[in-house]
Picture (tube, each protein chain N blue to C red):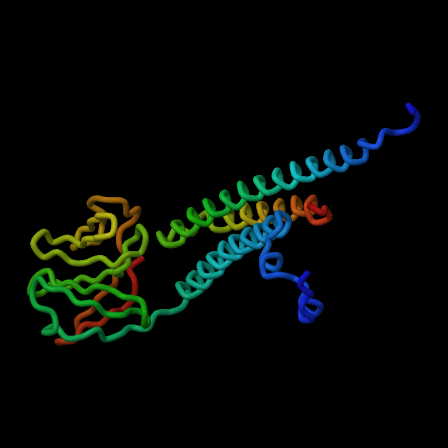
Length: 164
Length: 84
């Protein structure tokens, strides 16, 4: 009969036994998953509260470019009121500029301007908005796009804030 | 002969006890899984609500998710002390 190696006295647990997960351990780990789901929900609430607080802050007017930067029928993305908050500037005709928040009001996908139909299109779920006022034409978006007040100072375009 | 408890009885009792424990553990396991499914559903709804900018049901979803977590913690006490 083969003699038992000495190291087995120091390490008596085999890998198989070490990796064995009992039903009890598995059930306990399910509670951790439950805790993680709860924490994720809490994180969403915290993010929403932070955004609400930021909405209440005063928005500083900001220069977003020159009249010559956007051709007639063209569009341009700019960040307003701060970095990471994209808005879309659209030149409807020679004198008319409109701007909207670029995040679709459905699930936050970026909307794009379609010159031929004069609509803003969300490619994620086929949402359509009117380029003149940002109102919903078709698709799942529940609300119009937030409109940015644009002011022209000579050749410069300024974003003044969001229209209430 | 004929006096006292037969030899097989303790074994049966142990087996019955083990079966009972297993039933409890499986019942708890399934219940917690259902609660987790419910929590994922709530999380999905809350995420959609957050992304759409409504934020009307976020607190409700968090409260419901918290209740599910508390229920899972309450259920786990049935398993924590058992040896199966």
